[in-house]
Length: 462
Image (cartoon, rainbow, N blue to C red; front, side):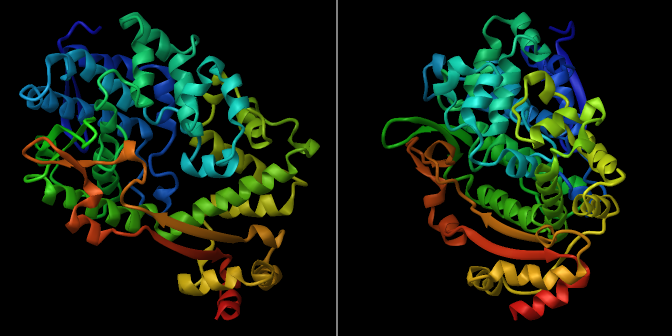
């Protein structure tokens, strides 16, 4: 542990962040290679192509989430003592565990985060193979249902060769295991993990403010101090302890938080140019996956070989996964785009991505696009309309962007609660005011293609 009782970090969003006593382990953990890798993964993926200031990394977001976890934890430590026995109230040790779990919640993300996971890993990834390669076979049952990046983060925390694991265990035996349990919602204080993963949690509490600040938009603002001050513990009808927010005092700040989230998704995360760029990278990777057996790829630089191996469908060890980040993917795209005699499609897509010559949106309503795509040979007709304008294979010049946004989680363990004066908890999604705003998930679809083909596709769809 550092000699000083207080460690300080000046942050662009939260100002002066102070870490006291046991909390200062957060500063130690920041220095490990597993956490430092997050400096090389942008929080907003390709958002900087539209919002030039959005260059912030997942590391600064994770640090902000850790700081907010401490603030929420300190408040709960005081507010729950008139309701719970001491053994169930947060202590310095449990607040420290919560902070490290928040710091590590994004630990396993790959290049471009969700875009990489969607295209290269896929929802139906080989769970058994990855568990075995990551050395997690003895915890397989415990990890069922985990997403790929959650598996990787779990592996970094458990792997004996990890500097992160070694540092945590030097501080206290079993420290890394408690952090993993917190992230898997298996912690011995059962309500605390909900602060890391629910409709209103420390992850979103940080990224709403941080992403709004760095992208320069006026959305994403809410009263953070008031939100923290209304955080309390209550009971569900089944007598389960949950963390939630005071029903009398928190309604407006909860509404403010949710409106900020909705506006930020609509304005930043789902911005048409951002989604076009992400779709093009996905098409680049998809085509590369098809041609990766070409002998021309045998002599790639060592630092992009893990990327190439994973794109080809192999599972990687924790050591190799440490080499995956946004920078190595950018170098890979640049390297392949300059190769001679390479596939014309992947070369053209790579050059377009690097020069920001992005696909343009087809100006048509989501209803019309959906109807056309559902028709017999709908996709084939669009590809034929695009073909005259393509330098490569027509299937790789159309991005079908399907947006599905739901304000509230369907999973019980991820729900946020309002808690009344009797400490009775009801799901936030059931409150009449909030339910009327966001009763149904939003779904819509957009098409993007090369600029020269936009008019032809528009006429085709009608």
